[in-house]
Length: 475
View 1 (cartoon, rainbow, N blue to C red):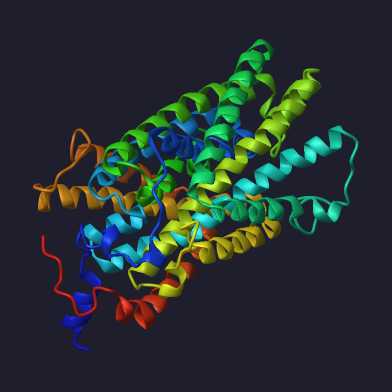
View 2 (cartoon, rainbow, N blue to C red):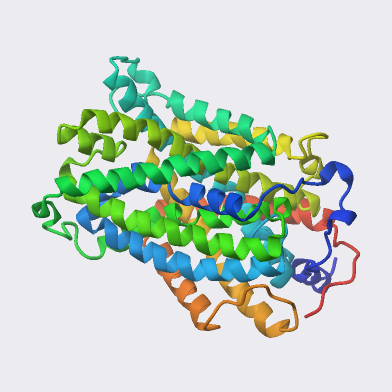
């Protein structure tokens, strides 16, 4: 193959209207059951969870102190810029795959592959880190009722004396895979109920916790220095981007072009208000040095003598955090499904259940993979691993929306992001800075994964792509 032909393969773009329902084989189709509020619930379900109930306490305790609030705001600004880019794309390309599909139609096959392969790892890792957060609250709850389990099953090695594997995190991942395999209608119903419980729980935390704030706990506000808030923002970033996983369910949405952009904006707005209020309460109730890094709010309320509330929080946190695991497992299975349907991965993975119309094969593979990560790694290591990939996805989507706005201005758009190209450029800048703030070990892990991905692409994907032999898309 000549260099020109290879370049043509890498840059060929998927036409926006190429994969319509009528062109998809019956055994690869997804069913449509999700409306606006179900989509919004999935988005909120993906954003609000371990960020409040587990990671906020961990980052405040080890990285930022009370300034964890600033970390969330920085991450929120970057995420908001990207969210507007996702909203414009969602109104143009209501297809499964989210950032993978957006990159494929605008920047070409290699860019789409790059971000799709990236998201396969990142979404699985997000599901794992959230499951670890669920496990921390479950362990707290068992202690409260006098059930003391062997140390070996309470956490991954290095997270405590005698810890070997986080059994609860493993079980949560496998249980979520089972729920996803039941069908998208069941997922939508569960999300509506669970997210309602979760939002009510956060409001309860804020409403009761505000009476136990001690302003002295806010001093010093930057105990680790002002630069630490950027590292904190890079670490908590995964907690403010659940809407992108929600957008992978585009083909299972009713009136996706109209509803997805609204759901993206609604879900991030609701989540950021709750994050600000919750972090203010957490760091005001306890000195950052005393905040428990896994069950922050439960321990904070127990410390002020409200054991009953602490137990309610533990139960509610378990329900609430499970929705995050569910959202990101949903996301990774739909990205994998879309890549397989496009031929970039074996089409065997794109087969759906004959009755439930969900990709059950990849669902169980993802469940087992996330269970392995959750059972064997600590929460900060997995969180850092997730964020570099998601930040890369945000950069690709932000670049792609600029490219399509100027190369294909005639394409109908249900939503047009304001201040083009200022908003996406701000999102790119924030994302690059946050990536730079991550530890070098995270870069190494990410680079290894991408090298493996390039081997797969050049060894398999480019030759099996459904665009192989087709006329390339033009701007």
